[in-house]
Length: 100
Image (tube, rainbow, N blue to C red; front, side, top):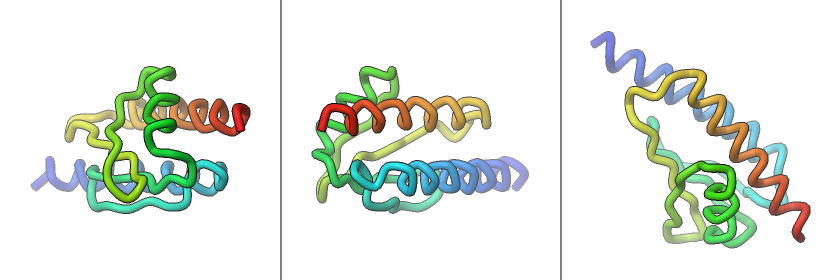
């Protein structure tokens, strides 16, 4: 029960940070979908471009249908790792915006 509660807390933190990312980069992202830690960023830019930009920032994501980029972090991800991943995705989005 404690492990599940911790996973749910981390999922809420990740969702909150990713919603901020979507709001900060409307030219790159249009929304967030999914549940728990299995989340996807709906992209305005081509999802393959977002995946490539993330890869340049050392963030591994997966392109999915409907122009979505999937994020599948481990259940044991830490708060610091969540913050680092979102910061790197932010840099990736900035790079995409600069190239448009």
